[in-house]
Length: 133
Image (cartoon, rainbow, N blue to C red; front, side, top):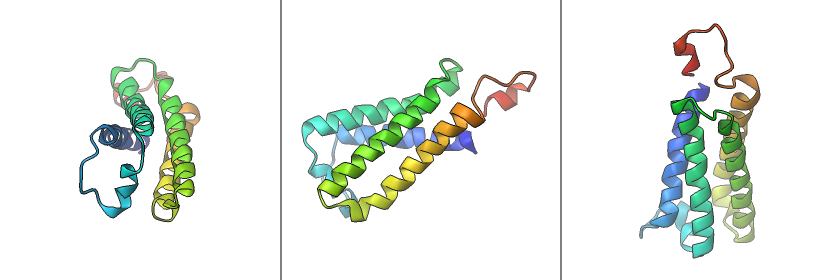
């Protein structure tokens, strides 16, 4: 289950990060806050989300630098804390807050899971299929 969260949320974060750079017109009301962000915040949050999403996926795929997975997940949870502060300041926390909280908790779970409970590359004597988890 942990690897599913890693890959699904890795794709989610990369997609959301790209969206910061190509904000299309006509976003749903729940995402209208994206029109209020300045260029600098779009660039910072978009870059962090893309790097974090890639950090969830690439180390596991290439089986290199797997210690980056929990760091990427923890970093994305910090991005969400920053997003919550921004939404509280701009009065949009009521609509976005629950999603921000859930994303923060999921990223903290992935950070704990890959950092403490099931770190990749540390199982000895297990099958190759088990290492792919």
